[in-house]
Length: 450
Ligand code: ADP
Ligand code: ASP
Ligand code: MG
Image (cartoon, rainbow, N blue to C red; front, side, top):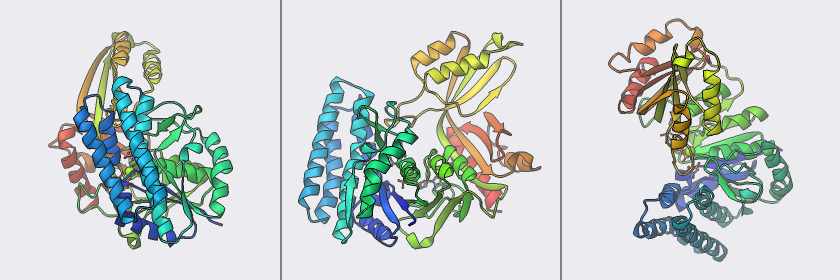
């Protein structure tokens, strides 16, 4: 039988009526045996604030009340089933304990444990909504199967172990019921809770689909598919009915928040089709992400990734020398930093890094120890408040005229860095954060609204 994994994002499980709409989507598809949920909308942000050092005790109590309010409202509408009420009470009390313990001992492990509690609440509530509709369903603790390394805040799943644990603990349960489980979280070898980075529930769904050899993954969100750009930025953006794995991966990597950047990898490995649609309007259709698609246009979409940092490294040692880049990248690797874009000249190297959102608690990547280490072999200059705008498509590097069409609308803007040519699927420009929205709108108008 075909197996489908359906993932519902924060707004789709924001309250009782949203959950109820999503439950109907699940019930309509007998192949949907695994349901992955995010925390109810707003809850992870409240938890992130709880992890911050500057949060006062007074604010902490308010944040916990706000989380409780969101979750208990759903419980009330469900008629307060006893086992779910007990579960919520336990999670809320754990949130209190963990946030208190953070003020004495600020470890990333405790932060992850705290951040993971939102998905614990939403999965317990969502399973109860399915049961209320007469479905056999239970909540399953994904930490039993989502084995990761111990890189708290941005843990890496261990694919083979996840597959083995899933076959042992999760697959047998699917015969008699639908399983609702948590996105975004996992556990390391010692059982400590980890998180996969903000927006990681999409990735969790794809990983579970891969482990279960599912035939499809559905990402249900608040937009009817992947659009030619963020429809919040350009109201004339239009949905893309079908897009290739490569293009979708580039879009996600370059900031189209609708998909977590790593989501496509498991789908590619197992050739699993991914569908993105709106849980508010499931009948409007959406986007199918497939290995092969019929339409491969030069221009597919425009994406923007904010909060970029540019590192400019200058060293005369680079002149006619070897090994400078190797040394630089080794330093960055030791600090677990992945570089996005790179340009070089005779004695300078410029690199871009994602500044925020780099771990689940929103901590930046650039640390004092890293800067000190880099400064030992070059002069380092850091520029902030930048955004990366990417034109995504096909044959970009081999189609004459692409640069003219892109740069003619960029005339009023200062382009800080340009990257093109490594991939046939993108052309990227780095601009001031304050100009990013205008740049996206202008590019979208020129490439898609003509
Ligand atoms: P969820 O909580 O369901 O995971 P997200 O907020 O993470 O939802 O992602 C959905 C949002 O992604 C949309 O509301 C939209 O503003 C944004 N987005 C950015 N780029 C795109 C795009 N190209 N197509 C569709 N949505 C996009
Ligand atoms: N709840 C997590 C977040 O807000 C994970 C997710 O929604 O995908 O980032
Ligand atoms: Mg998301």
